Image (cartoon, rainbow, N blue to C red; front, side, top):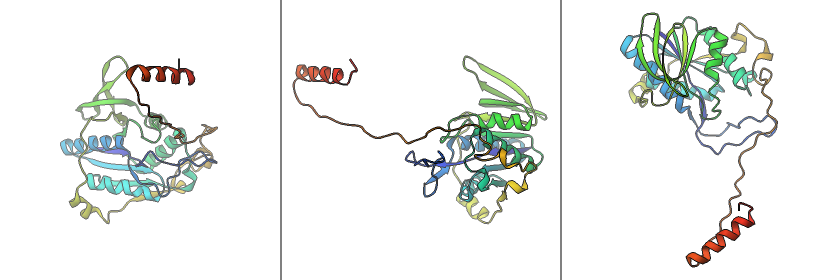
Length: 262
């Protein structure tokens, strides 16, 4: 069984600056990690591999330092890794990102199942997986809670709907996005770290794609126009009061009226 897992490097801290001109996150010099939701997707693929056999490939999009999450995936048991990296991919919104990764998936060749985390912690859109499936013209199921059965030509999953739980039998090739806690992610193995320290990571750029139209990638291919983006301001003020319960009650009431909360 051929499986592809989409992984992403995200900031390891919420204290991230924003470029005031482009409106994108400044990632240089910021500690990064694998997107937590992608760990559940990767563990799901590795469990299927252990039980049914097959190959687990990971694919990521980002600057060269994103190779770190692919190396982490190797330490967990992934067989192959590919990084989509090109300056022309920078600044992509969810639509351009989905199209770019779908083109990368096409370069990887035959596959049965694509597994994505539900969403990323730096975007929280939960749109990339389903949009990729649309570009690849394959069926997809989002919000998967559990893999119930792996069949010869399909996978049966439990899907979390707003007001119900639905059981879906989806034919290969297909894409699923998984919820957190579908599987408990394993820790990276030090033994595998030593075994895979020189393992090749394939790097693909725009010139390697079948579709090389620059207007479909990065900022050029992003229909979402950010008018303004900025980090939250930290203007919290504190006041300490002392007094009896009655006195403090009066002070709180006066302060609420002063702030026009009452």
